[in-house]
Image 1: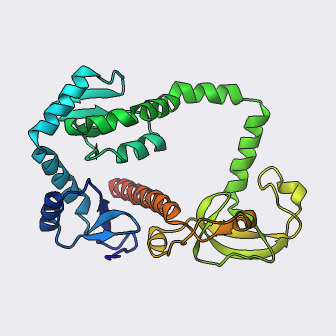
Image 2 (image 1 turned 120 degrees about the vertical axis):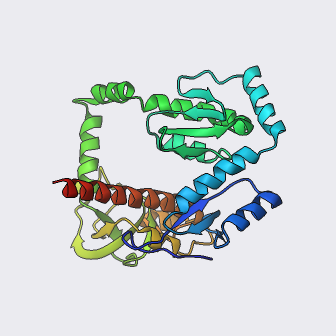
Length: 298
């Protein structure tokens, strides 16, 4: 398995790609990307190199063009017979473009549609006609999530929460999370500098155990079930490299592990955390690039 993962300032890194399996498609993929390797943990192909994303996008576009005309026509016919009528969807010569307010649910749903891809120039997801059945199957979840994330809907919810106990609790939760600490039982301390799953914040890395005993009354809103046999532990986000090298647990966490608040991550938990870490690292690279451009322009 190819784990050629470097820090963000070191190139190359890698990109992942997945697509419906068939022997001929895999053969064409391996011919185009001879250094690609299948990753069982990610359930995707990894392609090394700083230009991997551009090369993958070009390959996916060619593969879309290669789809059997019958599949394309079948998708067109299905759309005309039972069209998706939505302000978030438009038809263009190769298929469909989907533009919605940002939503994690929308992204996760569209990633499950074969050959769907993000077009950065158009700022839209593109789906070929041949994948219409898959898109239609997921459209209700996509549209509902998009509507929830419309600015006016988010504003309405924010206005409705103003001055309520719900808003106050949300502010306290945000303030508590920014402190980057979690209670851990004194007799079941987590390992340090190793990704673990937590009940509160998903997969993270504990950096220290302070030894400071906790007053349960002060944290019961944020950390229910904590008693005076818990101490504070500091944490940080796990890096993509750490997550890729973390071995998944064989079984789901049992009740005792969930009560203690941390456990060895499962494969599904690791997959979700790797996607989030990859997006987080891309944002960091983009911010640095923008900052660099601004500095050069001074």
